[in-house]
Image (cartoon, rainbow, N blue to C red):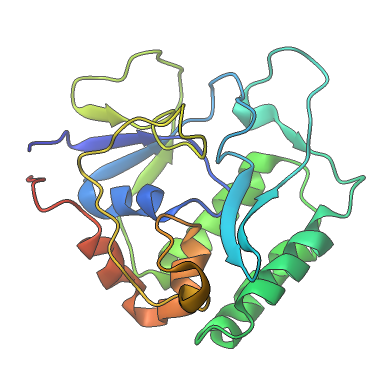
Length: 218
C-alpha cells in the first residue's frame, strides 16, 4: 500500500504509539495549529495503563469562546493537574524497567507552569522524539486547509481516543511489547508513548518500526 510523502497530525499530549509511528513512516510531519480546537481528543489527553486499567489523563483548558484556534488554547492552571498527572504516572510506571532512567526528563514538565497547550505539547514532543532517536523533520501549519494536499495523508481526526471517531489505519499494526500489568490485563495496544518508553527504553524505536504495517511501502 502506497502512502503520501507527508503526514498531517494534530498536536497531542503524550500521544499514542500510533501517532509516533508516523514520524518513522513519512518524510515530513505537519502539526496542525490553526484548526478550531477540538475537545475530548488526544490534543489535551493521553491514556496510560495503571494498576486499575486504562487511565485517561486530561489537561484542563480554558475555553471562553465558541471557536478558539488550537494555537490559542490556554491551559487552566487553577487546577492542580500537573501534580495529579505526575502522581498517576509515577504510580503506574514506578515499577517499569526504565522509569527511573527517564524520570528526571519528565519532571520539569510537571513543575513548570505553561500558559498555552501547544507550547507544552511541542516541548514534550521534542523531548520524546530525542529519546526515541527520531529525527524526521516536522513543522507547524501556516494556514488551515480542510482537505490536505495530494502529497499529504491527513490524520488530524483519524487518531482519536474515541472508537466512534477514529478511522481505520491500514498503516498501523501495534506490535507487542512488555507491559508492567500484562499479567492482569494482557497486552493493551496503542497507549501513550510513555507506556512504551518506560517499559522498553532504547528498544522503543524498534517497537515503533514493528508497528508499521508490512503492507505499507514508500
